[in-house]
Length: 396
Image 1 (cartoon, rainbow, N blue to C red):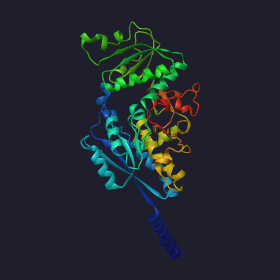
Image 2: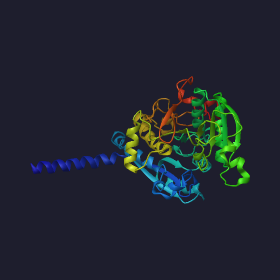
Image 3: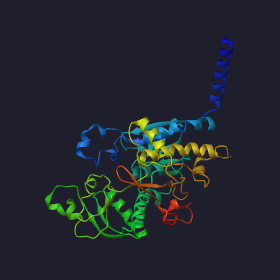
Image 4: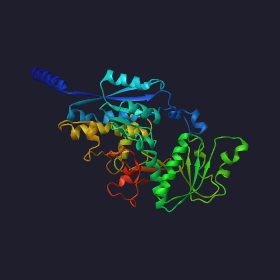
């Protein structure tokens, strides 16, 4: 009996060794910055800054690691070993050349970029000749979807326009149409406010006034740093605040001069993902993430996770076709993904943005999901939010 078991074990090892020779290695490059202002601790109460709760690394690499774990069952089906190879650069100096060198030295087949929008745009242009997909998992700026038209650049994080369209749909549906807009001093604040104003025009909201605010205690700037002055002498149903640092906006809810809903960077916020969502398998996904990283999943985590999942799905669905190509597979009308948040997601063929539902939530609850049922599109209702084909310089 022992001899039989011994011989079977040898046979099993031989089969495994034979199979391993047939397995293709697929290397996924993940690139980010050590000095990235977007991950500084902003918009947090001073007490929380001193506590341990905000010393957790909240970068989306966590979502990518969960994605690698989740697609392991696909490895046997596709005979492909998916590997995540990460590289964090100290700063942006010569980053384009450094990434190219890393890609060539490590035989990278797929790229995830967690970088600021302008840096990402420059890198994507430098890599446009590479026939490998580049996934933007964190930069929400609209110009990446409307002006930067690169065939191999995909976006799994929703654009600002998708987020502001979702809020505008909700307020239009509720008939809260008069909006006061508050804008912070940063360039990112201005871009966010402009996106919401465009969304308001599209969905029939009225901007009653637009006012600038400052994070300051200077009494001479009361009209810009005092909430009573900022929200007084105007008629509105809601206040939209564009404050990407969230240093000012967290104090705005329940502090306006008129009884009004706050939305934008505080109050009701549009997100790709929120931990409190309870449908479509979301609790199971969030549970796996929380067990792995001991924190709650956020929007960029989800964007990194779905980017990794798209690789395996494309390989399973189209890998056996002649002249298989990942870029063509991801943009195929037949390619769909389950993002655990409702309708199937897919990439828009004109600007490579991932179609998806948006969660409208407070800090601890998802209030609604956009697009709302009352808004329809001639081809795909998910295209009622975001930059449509006719409004983008990027074409199929």
